[in-house]
Image (cartoon, rainbow, N blue to C red; front, side, top):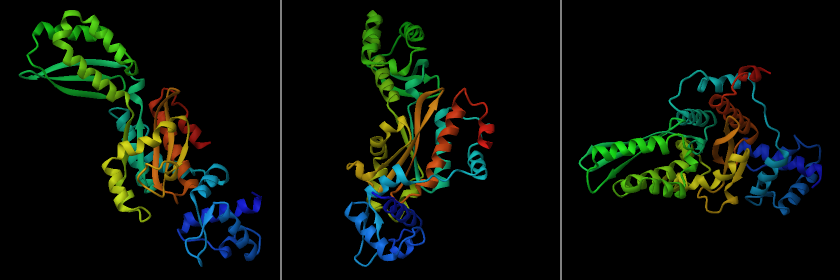
Length: 345
């Protein structure tokens, strides 16, 4: 594709993102030095190549999914954030604010990003995978009823109610408390495999018969903690977006965790822009999902993303997303010195 076609495609995408209306050749003349007839011919060629389409015979052109993909990958010029924009973001979740745990920080950031962009936001946390078990406790709550409590080093808390066929004795509870302290506390969550619990079961010896329901509950809790925790904020922004089918949005909100997990797996490797046509099972058509990774002390820790129409302002919102992700990374990492100095350079 020659440079003129690339310039025309870029102009069409930028105009359509701004106005939401099909773009005609006369509008493109403001961006490309060529006659209206030449631009129409070039736009017709871009349509044949699959980058543009014409909604109506007499209308201008709009980008196709392939047009957006080429634009995002090769043609887009990001708009750097100004100091005032950075200050505005910083004020939404101050660096010196105290958060109960990382999940609370993630929620605060994703809510702020949704308000700023008027898109829905998604935050996926892999934090438990890189956390250590700091405490495991069995708490009697009634006749044959017990609550199993698991706390990790990043502040995540998981609990599960377990009903037994008999009451545990004081000796059995004391044994489990001592056993958990010696064999579970300090272990990384991602090490809690089926094989690990098989070894635990063997090590418990004769106590395993009475404590097996507790061990089974711990296995289930560890599996839940190892899975990505996905949360969507700003759902109302999806419901008020005129470019989305309301029935599709309702279906998505009813099953949002499973829906968005389809886009999350690759997002930990770097910033990703993914379109609904790239995943036929994603229920929201004509949409895009932009995700940026979050790290903690140099380790992949989670991701933050935007869900919006395919006509989202990528050049504006990608820098917002990157700044949010970078700020979270610095706030949860030990290496957070010099952030303010870097922001000003």
